[in-house]
Figure 1 (cartoon, rainbow, N blue to C red):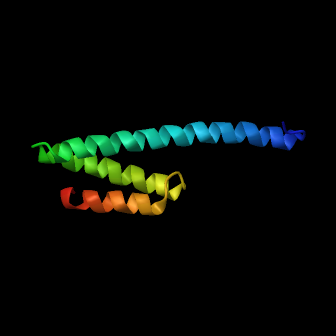
Figure 2 (figure 1 turned 90 degrees about the horizontal axis):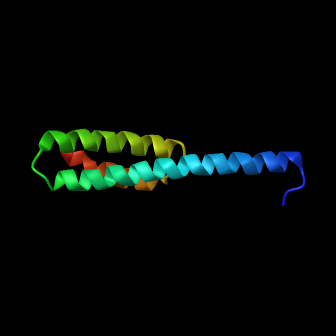
Amino acid sequence: MANLKASLKDIRKIRTLTNHNRTVRSELKTLVKNFRAAKNGDDKEATKAIARKLVSAMDKAAKRHIVHPNLARRHKVACAPYI
């Protein structure tokens, strides 16, 4: 266990950030799942809307270093034909 007050604060801060990052990653996984389901479906407009949401969310997560930038790029390339 940490002895310094600053270390205790760091532990609290890391716990909060970890929970937030976990939430963002979960939302990204849900968007990827929805995109894959939509691209196999018939509705082109729904696929386009979901692809745009996914690209935007991936860019934001990569910018904040929640996911690796190459992961975001791979998903953006997969979405590109549908936008």
